[in-house]
Length: 387
Image (tube, rainbow, N blue to C red):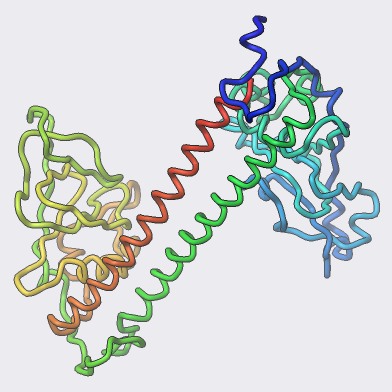
């Protein structure tokens, strides 16, 4: 190994010493757990002690668990302190990744979880980020396929060699990524709250069953809404195969979104609502002209006087899965769309509602892009700040 390979591409100022090769087993102690008898309800009733299973290791920090256990249930388990690292060692998810997290509260674990407690010369925040940065390599080297479920050869993993800086540099790196993780979590929560808020407002700003006016309206609108059929406010058009077309600037969309770009469009000037004909039939989305859609994606053009953004909200409020006409791959017909009963207000109220949700969508997109940018920055820095 060259001296160049013993230091990362990016370092904090003041750190110049080469990193040293150490074995994981010399940096930490290891533990595990089990499942208290589920036949004895007293192991779980009124439980207040965190009990980590593979379901709980979906984020990189754990403050709560799906199941809590009682003091009786925890009597034969080790209560691991906060800052301990937990790794999923047995689960179907190990086909793709090794879930790893850090405890923010003391917790017990079940038999599918391994716990790592660092020694004084190893910073737990740094080691967590090492596992995140090295996830694919560790999975490739220590993942094994069992007869029923995938697992990690943890005994071998403990002997893995890793490049480690002095504790002061570990702490600087660990602290930096902890702050970055907190920022990512903050934007994730903002994004999640906006998505939940949008869902709630879609329910409250459209009439419920048996009612002709919504729960929430903009000031100045008092007239009842009219019941119509979707076919009365939109023209549902079929997508077509695009493979005969040459490459070009016009986007092609399928049920999953953008696919490629071609030389011709099905709609050049009119924006529309895309809705799946086969496969994913319950995720309508806006199509900005010009565009082409494949044969598994309908595009719906609003009739004159109908607001497009309002129409998208109408589509989002329909339970499309209930209109599935197939026993196999979900399918939707033009007739099912056209016959769907909806409520429609005046043009002015349509525009007010459409503009509100359009601005809300812009805000959601903004937070989503910020979140993705931070995640990309972290991924890049993990590659450059570890050896």
